[in-house]
Image 1 (cartoon, one colour):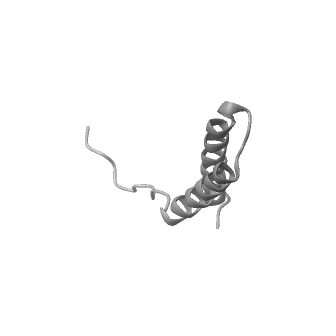
Image 2: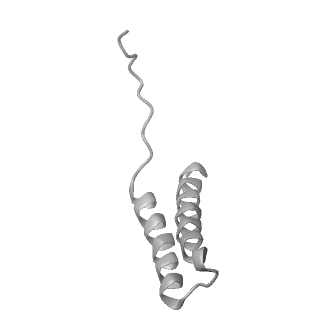
Length: 64
């Protein structure tokens, strides 16, 4: 298995987690609910990104 399939999920999880945490830090505190939401966002991004396969390269030439 190529490493690109792992990196796709890792980048999606980092982006989802950082987005949730940056929203949570708008008031300079992170509550328990905001922490749970960030964790769930990371897990959801990992799961959904891992479930979607990478697009296969098309071997037929496209008409121009």
